[in-house]
Image 1 (cartoon, rainbow over the protein chains, first blue to last red):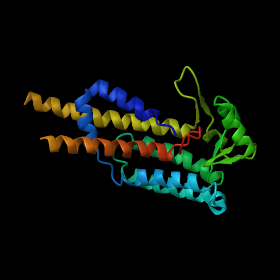
Image 2 (cartoon, each protein chain N blue to C red):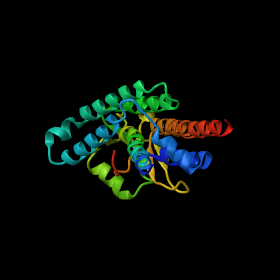
Image 3 (spheres, each protein chain N blue to C red):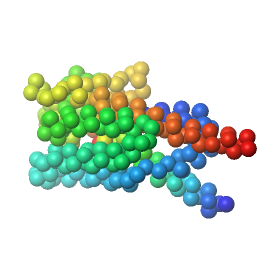
Image 4 (tube, chains in turn orange, blue):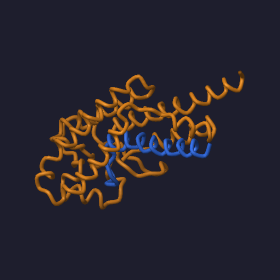
Length: 193
Length: 35
C-alpha cells in the first residue's frame, strides 16, 4: 500500500488551511460512488485471506484483481471533474495496464525489492505469486510500469512502488490541497462580508 | 450544536476512510502490508 500522497497532502493542507478549516473542509468532501472504494479494499483483503486455502481463488485471483481495478477506474472516471482525479485515474490506468499484461499481477523488480527486509525477497523467490504481486523476470511485459522504484532511507519508509503509484499519490495530494484550501477561501470571504 | 459537530466529525471519519481506500485499494506498492 502506498498512501504517502494522502499523509503529505493532509499535513500540508492542515498547515496551509488551519486545523479547523481543514477538518471542516474534509467533512464536506463528496466523491461520487465513494463508498465503492472501501468495498473494493475489503474485497481485496477477503481475497488475500482466502486465497491461501482456496486453490480456485489462488489460481484465478488475477481476474478478480483486474475486475477491482476496472471498477475503481470507472468510479474515478465519474469524478474526473475533481481537481487531481485525472492524475489518480492516469496512475491507476498505468497500474491496470501492467497488471493486465502480466496475468492480473503486479511485477516487482528484484532490485527494487532488495531494499526491503530480506524475508520479502525470499518469499517472492520461493513463491513467485504473492497476493497480487509477482517477481519480475525477463518474460515480464511492460516491466517499466511495475514496482521498480525502491524507497529506502533517508525516505522514512521502505517499499517498492510503481510509476503509477507516484502519479496517483501526486493526484491525491493535489485533490486534498484543492479541497482543504477552498474552504479556507470561502471562510475568508465570509469574514470580509 | 453538539449534534451538528458530532455529525461533522463522523463525516470527516467517513471521508477519510473513502479517500484512503481510493489510494490503498488501487496502488500497487509491494511490502505485503496489504493491497
